[in-house]
Length: 446
Image 1 (cartoon, rainbow, N blue to C red):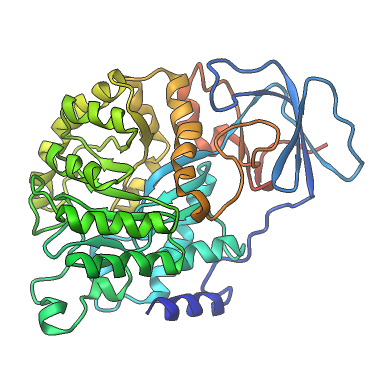
Image 2 (cartoon, rainbow, N blue to C red; image 1 turned 135 degrees about the horizontal axis):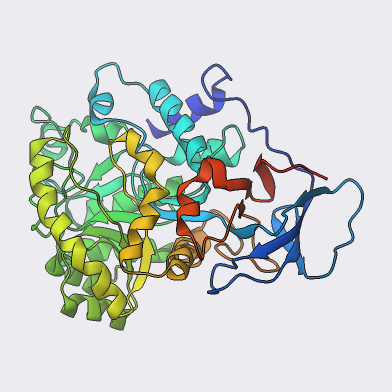
């Protein structure tokens, strides 16, 4: 099925996928008279000039930079140049579709790619130049973006989530029976959304399958979830031996395992198994957060919104305890200096995607503007680097410095003073550059 989707995608014509990305690639771009948020500092630089050559920042200088006549020049007029935004917990496929669409009898590969292609381009136009996909059928989309057949952010793919039977990734309908006993994979497994894997051998195979297709990290379900029907939020999933198997297989490929987990018990078991990143964790206690600091474990945290009226009643009930827990975990994580990353984790509610930038503002309850901007650029990029040689892109992200990759935003105003700028990308993001290519320019070129 995976190969079928991939080949189908590569053979799509413009009638199915959006036209080939029409970005400007001049070889060099000179951004003149800009102030820089470098991804780490608490203040902007004085006015400087920044030269981009191919996909890399070649030079930053307060003095004028001499270039040849054909180089594209953009006069920033003192506006702010900052790194592209990074979201480390997205689901490019599940976030672009409703549950009804996913479960529809008429749902097809073609429909899937049409939806996710449009969603990916919108995400890039919101200034998100890099994302980590935390599970789902994403390899064909990533391949199309990298080949510039469609527009979208850089993607660090996890591939299909890996779940035990009755775990958070077991999305079988009531009439779908166990593959182990009855021999038929579930629909979600056929669509490469999940692997239902039990026991050490099956977990090893599932991890290796994802790595074979290009996973940059592995996503394992270590506890109950709110968007799955059959596993209470409080349950712990996967034995220590099963989890260790996933970690060993990932580490043999030079990468890491991230786990979905909320509770202290699930997280402590994951840490013992060698997991490097916890996704969610809204129910964690101080003891477990201190253990994470001691072991240098990342916490990839999200701020969930309240339940929506059209959300299934079961999901509302399961989310209640998580919503309550998140009010304290952010402040505790900051107090103990946990390695924090930020993501959105929108699932099956495509209308939420337009609020991706606005969710950054919710962090103002606990962090300064400078701390937030650092988290959604530099810090998130540090988590991406945990993939090591399995990272699909070579180079430094999340910062503006000589030699870093040219994923940049030129924004109208100073986001260190007024963070609301990042929540209005249509008007405030004047220039969007990814990999040295210009995807948006509202300024007059010289």
